[in-house]
Length: 205
Image 1 (tube, rainbow, N blue to C red):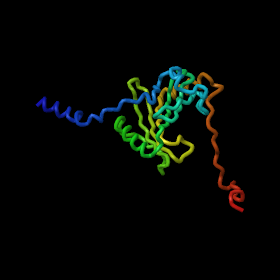
Image 2: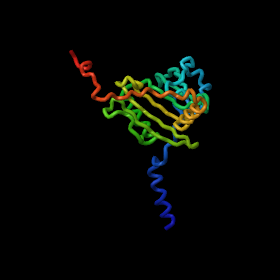
Image 3: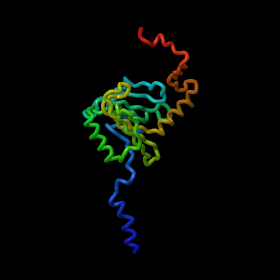
Image 4: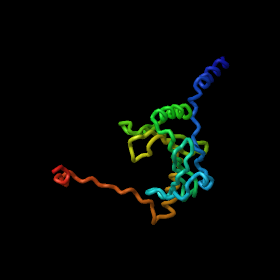
């Protein structure tokens, strides 16, 4: 009886191994989250490094192209962990929708189904997001996207993996260390009331 019970409990684990949580991604294109950018000086264009606008606690630098990836941006910290890589954004060399669909299939096979849709309702931008917790309790997000029309986003096929909790620590550290240089916020444009619209300036004459 006891053997039968043990087998009945173990059988689902043998039949459905994919139910186990997927291992959190930590690297791609030869870059590793948490590593120091100084380890990759031969793979990035340090002359392009500059703080990110409205997120000055991070510096972004371009990577040199490789066969599989056409371009990429590596973001690293400026405060809590200076030089620590917190985000990797890479653009695949193949920008076709067919390649994206094949890529998405392989992503799902390795990491399971994505948890969140990050594209637009019209599927001009196709983007799926996964979220993970690694063995050190770090929160890691991963977004795979396909875009051929929205010029405000990276065109083609791209992947972004981020150490989300450490990125937030960088922001907090920066604001504490530089209270007079607190990270600027993007300008907010207030909507005008309908009564103040100058319709004569908006219509053809």
